[in-house]
Image (cartoon, rainbow, N blue to C red; front, side, top):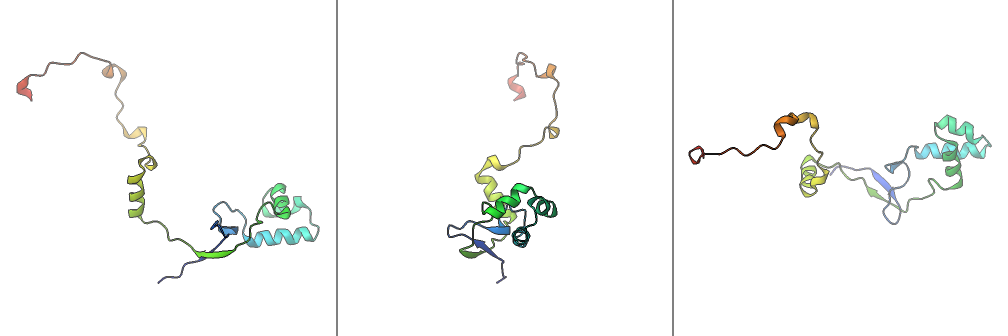
Length: 125
């Protein structure tokens, strides 16, 4: 059995910290931001150092961002196999990407105009 990484989660199962899919700063970066702010380094200088906005620094400091603490850990899920992707695509056809227009042969407008149907002989069938 292969070892999988443990992911921190809240009691509801939400991923927290640097493992969240939208996290841009690591947990170590957040700790450094808080340490620099405790040393009275300005928000602007901290934001410049970590290449983020002053608002992000302010929100980390106030607890608006990164305030959730892990209540437990779960194993990281393995990546989906190609077979699983095919199963999902067959269940939800809307997830299948539509073909590009360049893959179709374009027919001039004059040929697609409504024309009277041609008579087909029974021998041709």
